[in-house]
Length: 308
Image (cartoon, rainbow, N blue to C red; front, side, top):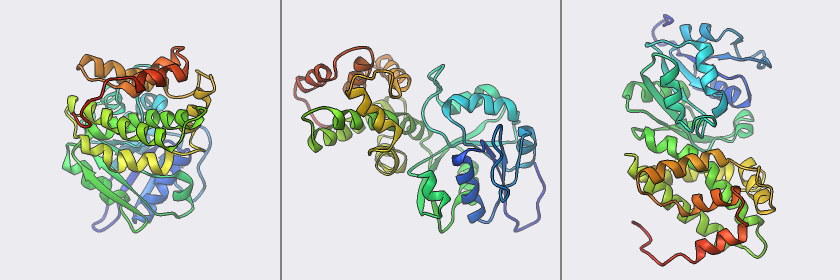
């Protein structure tokens, strides 16, 4: 761990030099800290210190933020080679496509670090890069990790809230793309309107909450920054890749959207006896069911209590 003088800012290591990694680096600078980016291909702007040697970042930084896509998280950890002293926070969303595993689990499998967390919330990258205001939530069972992320990123530009619900925040990061796809599907179906979109949003959050409770998480996390906040600010409208994928799905393009996430969530739910009707309906469409048929089956389900 790098030594620093009293009252100095902390070294914030960022694995991933893309737009999201650069945005996190800008937030770290706004909080008075020194970001250090490990990149693979395109070098970040000169104003942001960076290297193509990931272990150098892991060795010299107080905190590692993993700012890669879900599919690249495992490789990023393998390249950086963090050790037991590193605190690692995954700042990506979703599940690993090849395995369906939580990204925090991927980190645990690839290194000896044990103090792990997740950062999520409504953080539009271009807005951050242009000086916009936003907020996020860091979740970890380790208070040290939460406090370190707050010190690393909290400023007048970016408010950081904390949570112990790592399961719920990771689940929200997986469910948001699926729900955004459902919203896009409802917008793309002929004859649908705001009522259907509202139903998909409200009932989708309800089924996500049921799964969260079954996994040991807090269902209220879905109503916070990692769930509703991220969905409304970033993913739940035209222009979001997941929302647009849902529109394409309504038009018969079954290759569009996060099908691997939805299928992994359904598998987890079935293993615990939890029903996910909307997610299961999306999976059925990806597997070949006509979208209108799938919607008809959802609408014909028996009436029940709203919260259960």
